Amino acid sequence: MTTKILIVDDMRSELQLLTSYLEQAGYFVMTATNGVEALEKAKIEQPDIIVTDLVMPELTGLELCRLLKKETATAQIPIVACTTKDRQMDQNWAKKQGVAAYVVKPCTQVQLVSAVQSVMA
Picture 1: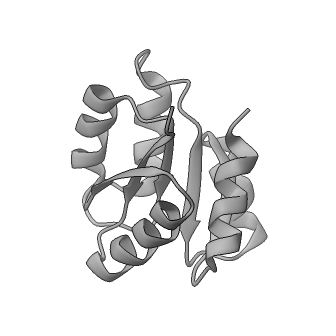
Picture 2: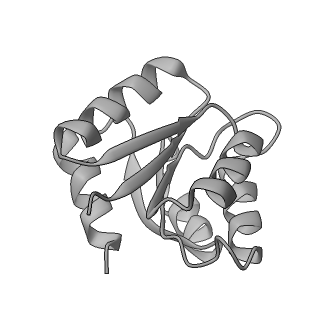
């Protein structure tokens, strides 16, 4: 069974890059360009993992994490943050919001795939 991953990023170039990284590693990838779309897709598609940017308009990645963790249908989905926010404070705060792994952009394929594998318990 192929692992389904939902990638959330408001920048199309990032979405394409992260999608290619994960597809090359053998994952099935779905995308969303904002937090609202991601929340809907997560409820309907039930991905195995969500990789999200934290800095997005309307609904930020952290707000998305909080909403996903409140919903029974999505509460168990591990979340990987993939973001330009590189301070330890940001990482600590993200973990408090339910983020299971944290990757700082720009990231390599190895870094992203390692983070995804680390949350696949």
